[in-house]
Figure (cartoon, helix red, strand yellow):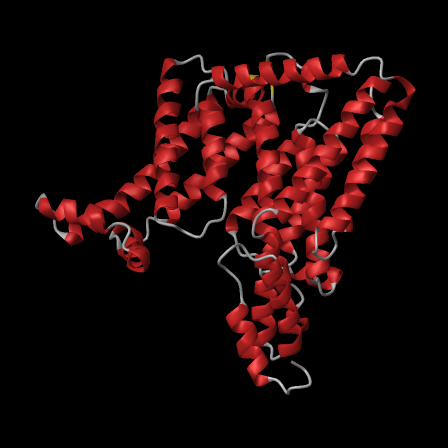
Length: 432
């Protein structure tokens, strides 16, 4: 087989479109929740002390000093676009905008040091390349070269991490010993191994080697489905299955050890399940979702000329509610992005009946945003992080204000009341 034939089969061979559709929709949805729940609280640190270092030197020249308002505007807008895309709204432009905004969100400052955010930008880049006709107009199986490039990229990521762990510190288990020192999570397994006659040194040695082996088994799984996208060979399913089980075990281990990797494991579980697992669950899910969407759209037939007006009014009302209910900088970015997405979606709507569904979907996006930002600990974390930073920069009055807002959003039994009293004790009576 010539190289050109091999690459043609790998990149342009038939891929089950259900995998592509489900992967894109679910990743976009999870990323929206990740943005609003996990990333928003860290925005309080941006612009502190007038200092910032971007991930790229040229970005420092272009952007100036990003502050909390800048960061949150980008994160809020990214979340609206991602959840809108998950609901089938927006086309090629929305995909590229989501990729650009998300990438700028982490690249603007090295305060964001999660390496997997760079990886997610790679994922979003491949999703943007896949923008084309609506999913309903695509065949069940067909060419999906951006998806295949993503599969190859994931294999490269695992191969790189596998190579990086061939250093002596990993192979001898020294890194695992250091990880275990903070929580002792592996002590029960060590005790079992020692009771079976295995020395501690051999246990950590085996652990280090098993981590490296796991990385390469996962690489093999992704390479197998990359080289055989149609899965004609029986061995492809077996190799992919081993890769899937290994990926689940590997990332479950990372969660068990409580490694600080954000939502990275959730994304890798999802990627492995959709790409390496069997196709029938994703075909069923795609079929049911398509049927539900068609049912809702049919029920909206006959809404008439008021569809666009009703949809637009619902979005404007939800945008106003965001502004009133969320007490964070740049909240208006949620509504502005939603309105822009509504305009684009309505402009390209196939009928007036579809317009009502568009308004309902974008209103749903904003309702979910409000719930994510107000019903958890997002506000509390944002303001307590801000208060702590202001204390370290010797700004006690501003810190009191931040801690006051944190306490108003604190979950039951939590709060920064002790810190407030401590700061008040150091202030002149007139300021307290």
